[in-house]
Length: 284
Image (tube, rainbow, N blue to C red; front, side, top):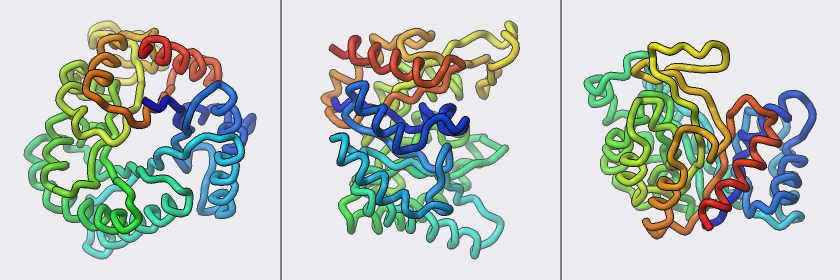
């Protein structure tokens, strides 16, 4: 297991102007992490600052950590065929960026809808599948593995993620498995992690506080698909059984990159560092 940090965890500090992405990379190395996961448009932007590609790659090499994964949004549910094709081409161009950064893993979203029913998902599956196949085939020329993450409510349940993986049917299309995000669709994380570990190219460690729908805790919480209240927590301090989750990941034989993804209300540097230390201690 190679434990590292998603740049998303330090978004709070970057948005406030307290850290640049280069500062984040140095900080990640300083706390003993082995890699950084790059999540653009949250604190930094390649389109307005293209020289960041070289700067990020060089900074990671300077401090001796890997660039593990590159994670972007995407939505192949469009109003026109032209927009559908444009979105595919945009994501393909991002694959080229992953190659320039020197990473071998990429997560891209696939779809977002207000109607998140299984009937709608089944209707959209072929359209989503074709897009993912074309992107994975392009990525394969670089030796890059693409993936879908379990988030966004629409393609979040473990069965839907598996359905898409099997439909795409490419050896380099897998899942970025977020151990906490299954709660957003009211799925038991222990069961879901167990089911999807064999498809994981990347693992995110995230924790949540959970309260039932009839106990509104107030500011700072959001609702699951079923109405439960959720709030980001420091990994190992929330309501997920982090010991059992990490046991499942470890016993699966997974030996790839694991990223801390912190989105709690505490200071992001403090929360991320405590989460990192907790996961390292629990894993060992």
